[in-house]
Image 1: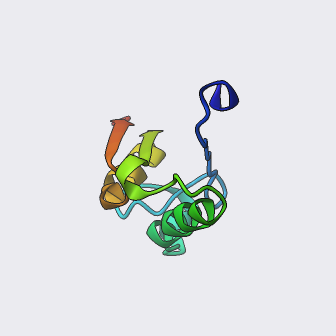
Image 2 (image 1 turned 60 degrees about the horizontal axis):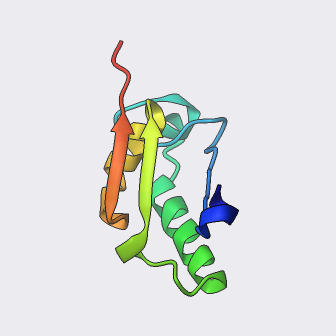
Length: 87
């Protein structure tokens, strides 16, 4: 789909499939990983290869732990969509 509609799609997996969203979950939180820095680096790296990548047209979505991470890093994106799972 990304090729068909000509957009860049990045799907980071995080440390052991988790992100440090400050409120939830997994080894990334336990090890205090700088995932906002990780997301910033992804956007920066993509913008060096694709001149059209910028925060003005960068969007993020996530479910559960990634949803929390997207909210925590919302300042990096034009818009976000989250799907949170509460236990």
